[in-house]
Length: 157
Image (cartoon, rainbow, N blue to C red; front, side, top):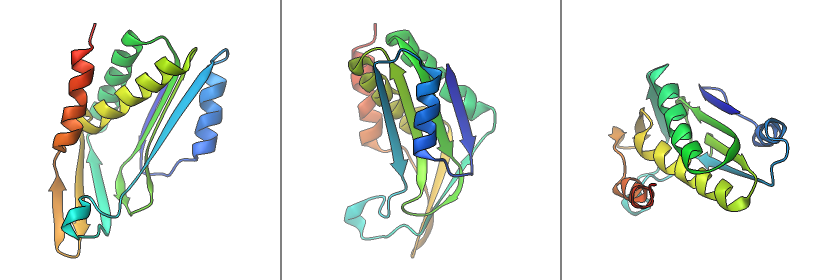
């Protein structure tokens, strides 16, 4: 079972975990990741983030996330996947993403969750604009995020 949600509303991590478990009877492993808005995009620049605005193209974003999940499912035997990504105006400490994977074994659950997050960070069509005391600026994909994809491409079947 796959569940994808792109929304402005916050989510309850515990509730999402329980739904993931209910979607995957017989699972031996459930891995969840919850990402938060950081107060510094780049800790070395000294600019504290006041808010982050995320935009997306409805329909296209969900389709892209489903394609990422399908790629993960083609590599690992997954029982259920839940991905929630927030859009709109968020502040440091706000939850921004939830990725949960249920599988028979922990190795495939860990790997699939990591794979999904790496691709979400680099390929899902979200546009992020951060606001600091200096004003606002659009955020590009980080080199480190793009580099994380290399290991998955190197190990592709």
